[in-house]
Length: 308
Image (cartoon, rainbow, N blue to C red; front, side, top):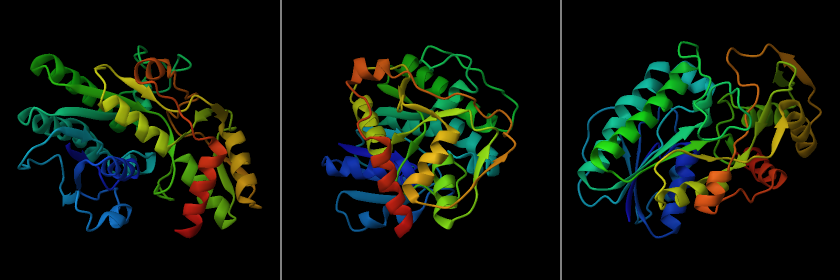
């Protein structure tokens, strides 16, 4: 297939390009490099099946030729990035999603939206199942990201219902691996950056809040399976192995061998206290579940950051 990937220079987007090319597809990557990095795609320079276009997908554009699938993966995704670029984040979820949907519709192509577990907000249901509508503060500092993705999901379903488009929606939970930005504010690169520098590791609150971590190759595999499926409603993709942030910090300390001490800072506003996916739907519909053990994935990620 010839596949369009927005956000191609992002952390997950670049790994998706690798996977699609490895499967023999032709890929056209789009990115305006607001938060993506050209170095994430440097290894694809000269690849006969890959084309990279500098493009802001919130602005009209055209792509000639056959298009079989459109993967809309563009968006600031870390708290640091979307708090720094709230309007751009809202734009890419609204105008950007509309433009990418129209691109898919005009070429009779399938469409996949990468949404987020942030759609659930600070959840009152645990673990989070796709039928849960969420607990989101619509005017809080994180709302630019939460509501951007919730709107993008609604728009995708509207296009499916109105135009009978073949659409998929993935709700991505915490994902980690090589090519994450060390300074993006998310817990994995933040802890690794501090640990590798021997600086104090910052835990917000008392560290009792929970997260679950999925290695990027597992996540990309889930996205590919979803793209090939007939499921039109959202599907959770993530690792249900849950741990507290404090436990995770201790795991990073052990694996890096750092002498860093753990320090506590106030919990940010609207920071979710629990985050764990119910992946029963992905298991039954896609035959998917994470396979990379946390310590194996962390070792590969640590090695990447040590060499970066």
